[in-house]
Image 1: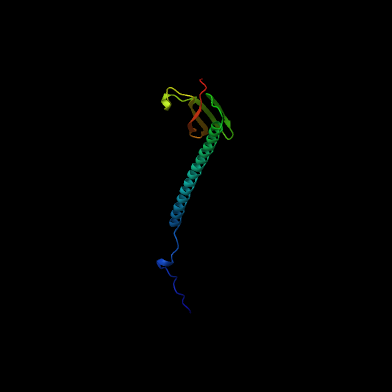
Image 2: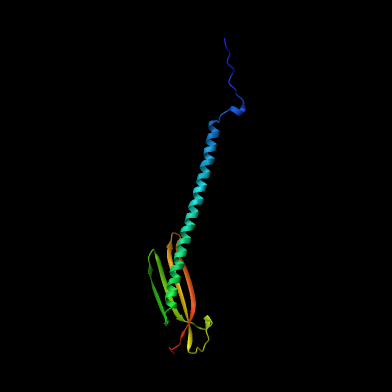
Amino acid sequence: MSVRPAPSTSPSERGFTLIEIAIGMSVLGLGVVMALQVFGGSMRLARNASRMTEAVVHAKALMDSVLWAPELGESITHGEIGNGFRWQRTIRNAGIEDGAAEDQTDVRLAVVSVTVEWDEPNGVKAYTVGTMRVVPNYGE
């Protein structure tokens, strides 16, 4: 008659219990949820940065188009650009509060500002750029 040895029950050969597996799965699940939240936040930041960059490009293009004009008269113009952007361009004569001299000679300063707005889920965002330009003074 042959005798079989008893199965080994040393701690190094034991398997995982059901509670250990459940705890491990819950820790893994928490890690996945946290990684997805970080990924979602970074996607939102990337979208906001992209929209801001697009607004800056539009504002610069609108500013450049008026700076190349031979004459600048006082005006307020506005319009819409595709993809949900709105703009307003203001041209006005510079005053003393802008640093212009009170007695302007044959040239004067014009203040040009461009604002581009767009809607975000948490409200309206805007980007404004402004500059001054020397223009002929025709005694207006």
